[in-house]
Structures are given as structure tokens and as C-alpha cells.
Image (cartoon, rainbow, N blue to C red; front, side, top):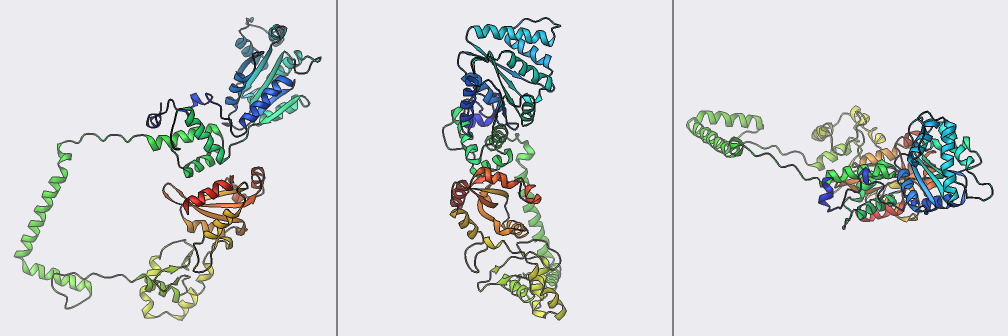
Length: 505
């Protein structure tokens, strides 16, 4: 069991793969889908296929479907393997049913033997429920064998009273195979990803099942990152949560015991340093000429005369007000306020577009040279600098002397309906980087950013658009420019964003 399980007093590790199917999470429409499957198993004669991405919870759903079926069903679970043939599939099914088979039985003989077993069940008013996991790996021949069993045991006189039924669980490619082989006799269902709210509830549910009693041991920012990386897939969420808890709750290793020399290294260093200082001052007192030479050198380097012997002149750097005034006079794009602070955003220095949040060395030199005057040609060249300054998006820029730049964007997000959605594009610890990103886009007015915290540091998140539903937001991803699509945007609920904004105001 992982170290964090002991630290959190858990009965077991709820995020371990071995316990993945031990508890059923009803959120994310999982309970509704399970209820729908149970109804189809009882009432429908069609082949049923449940599709979903890797890690979406198909295996867990299959296990709980088997446990939820009434006593009239005999549920058999089979995990398909890559390119499993029809004969291999029927042999695996027969072994699960405990049937005796000849070693050289053909496909027709296997179909007949399984059919006889199903007839026996049907005579006792029972039905064989076949559940095939990883069904997308089945070859076409194996899928035809499944359909042959269904057709062989179909009862045309009474709907839903067939001797055998089948539910296939697989990835998206399974849909095309089923539609091809059974175009008019199939039911297709889909497992969807969890949204951020459902992800939080999923983690809380897993911890509760393991006996955890307390506040969530993962902060919301870290959980949002995990949700984004996992794309709402419970299987991947388990892995990432396990890594996060392991890093946060694993006790530090005890340092090895130090030897005699290591334990006494600091005292020895102190004694040695004291001896060196004593020797230095003793020799300095005996050699007055040497100290006089040192004072002369110090006076020469300080650039002053008449300075008392033995003292070193300390150069005081220029105040920021002088630097900002010089930059303002030279067209540097930043203005000095009356209290000495610098307002504005310097995105370039005239020697390239290197973003910076502080004065560069060249700008400090300009400040020191400001008292000597500026050549007309140089002033003309620097006058173009403000045109290179990157401004933030108009929707996120506050009035001059007003609130912080992101306040307008945050107020806009707070004003949106809490049940609507937006697309989260990216996050950064640098607010200036976020502003520059928005300003570089062809439609900056459609973007907002808000302030949050991640890893105990300021975290600035860029979002795009406003959509009435989660599906509408997901559909909008395909219409984004290719550059934004490469950022892997994901739909995020406004209620979650508004709570994040208020928490960090």
C-alpha cells in the first residue's frame, strides 16, 4: 500500500488499479448509463455496444452490469485479445462456461456446443448474458460468431426472451464494426469524460470508499491541472492523483549518520577562520606602510580625494525615478509616476522584442547617461519604441490609474451565467506573458484571463468565449484556429471559475 494511504489513514489505496472496479462512481451519467443497460438487457434483442476512450471506465461498468443483473441471467465476462479469431473466441467462451470440448473442434462444432448450453438455460427460464471487454480488438470473424449466436438463439415470438444476449465494451472503432455487421439490429451507447466538478466528486468518492474522513488532501488548482491532463478519464485521473499524493505525503528519507569529521566540520571551520583573522590584523598592525598603500588604492578606485584613510567609498546606485525619467525622455515606452514607480509595460527595447518585467542593463546605462544629453539621431531612433510595445487585450485593460489590468476580465467572467461554459486555453505564472499572448491573437476581444494560484504562486489562466452548454463549448474547439487547437483547450464550467476568482480576490 502506498505511503500516503498510511498518512491519510486509508483502509486501502483507492487509486490503485487493483481496486479500480471495487466501487462504482455514479456521477458523470454513469448511473444513468448502467440503468439503461439493465433495461436493454431485459427488453431488447439487439446487439449492444458501449464505446468510450481508454480509461473512461468501460471495465468498471461491465463488472457492475454483471453484478446488477437479476438471477435469471448467467453473466459471463470475456476480455478480447488483439485479432482474436472466431474459433479462439468460442473456445474462450466454452472454457468460461465449463464445457468439455474436443481438442480439434471446428467453429461450427463450437457454435453447436455453446448453443446446446444456452438451450438448457432457456428451458429453465434463464438467459446467458455475454459481456465482452476490449471488443474493439476482435476481428471481423469473431464478431460474426457473436452475431451467429444471437441469431441462433433469437426468439421471434417474444421480444426480449432470447436465450443469449451480448454487450460489447470497446473504444470508438467498435462503433464502425457494429454498424457494418448489424446495421439494423444494434444499440450504441457512449461513456463520456468527466468535467472538472465531476472529477472533484470522483476523487472525493474514491477517498470516502477507502475510509477517509477530512478535507480533500489536494488543492483545487492541482486538481484542475490533473483533470486537464487526464481529459476527464477516470483511469488516468487515478494514476495522476496517485502520483500527486505520493509526492505530497511520502515522508522524507532520514539522512545518514555523520562521521566524526563531518560532525565537527563547522567548529573546526570557525576556529580556523578566527586564527586567519587574528593573523591578518596582527600583520596589518606591524606594517603601517602596507595599510597606507591599501587605503590609497581604495581612494583611487572610489574616484574621490580627501577621504579618510582606511575607509572605502560606497557607490550609491541611481534611484528608480531617475531611470524611469531617462527612459521616458528617450521614448522607452514607460512613464514615471510622482511617487517614483514605473507604470506601463516594456515589451521591447529597440534592440529586439525580448519581453521583460524589469529594466535591462542597456536601459540602466541610458538612465545614467541622461544627464549628458541625447543625440538627435538617437532620439529619433528611440522615438519609435512605443509602437513596439505590446498592449494587453482591450477587454482586459483597466483605465489609467484604475484597478489591476485583469480586474475587467474577471468582472466579465463573474457576470456570466454560472451554468455556462468557456474554453480554458492555457495558464502561466507570468501575467505579462499572458497579456502578450492575448494581444498576439487575431481575436483578443474574445479572450479573458483571471488570477488564481498554483503551487503557492500566482497563476494566470486564459479562457476563450462563452457557451450555453458543455457540448457547445466542445464543438467550438474544432472551429478554433489551428494554433489554439494545439494548446489542447478544454471546456470549463463558469461556476468553477467564478469560485476560483472569489477565492483568490
